[in-house]
Image (cartoon, rainbow over all chains, first blue to last red; front, side):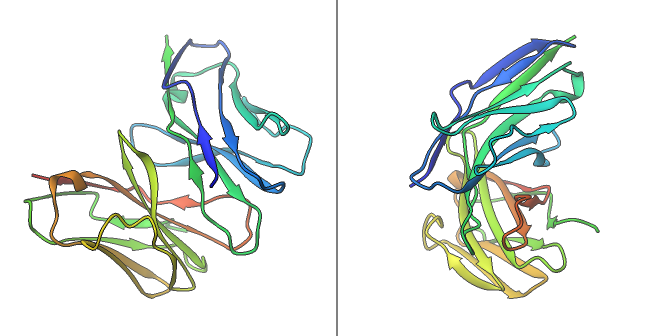
Amino acid sequence: AQTVTQSQPEMSVQEAETVTLSCTYDTSESDYYLFWYKQPPSRQMILVIRQEAYKQQNATENRFSVNFQKAAKSFSLKISDSQLGDAAMYFCAYRKRVQGAQKLVFGQGTRLTINP
Amino acid sequence: DAGVIQSPRHEVTEMGQEVTLRCKPISGHDYLFWYRQTMMRGLELLIYFNNNVPIDDSGMPEDRFSAKMPNASFSTLKIQPSEPRDSAVYFCASSLANRIFGYTFGSGTRLTVV
């Protein structure tokens, strides 16, 4: 079974600085998707960024970027120029890229605090 | 698009009572998922449907839990009888097959069983 591990239960960063959240996963599949979701205090799960395993280029969305290391099964999230609104729980998630296989497997989450 | 709509947003009930959580997926989405979030166990998939048919219910914790999807626009998750350990946030999410964008989540129902 696939597993996702986030080894940092909590992280903090000064406003305007850069922070990296770690994620590793375990799978025997070669084709899959990886995601980072943000959950602010409102509880809403918000998709931050996604990566297709067959793409070597790391995904980027404005201040958010990933470092995808397929061989190492590592998928870290870098947040640049941190803002107070980035404070939230962040979840790494995995999904097989197979017809009909839609299950998302989540890590335990990392609570990110932004210090003003 | 109104997104995935869950109701109620909060529910407080007494142990032993029946609880029904409701979800309206995004129109046109053919997958619907129920997740439970707790501090101890994180986000757990309970069950998911494809075209209203349950595909995998292996995450349903016990017979006290049941889920239905009578049509493409409505699903329920029922707990009967409820127990304090069922206290959690329950999320519904919907998706289109083979879209890489992951899920669209509802805002969740916070259930407290006292």
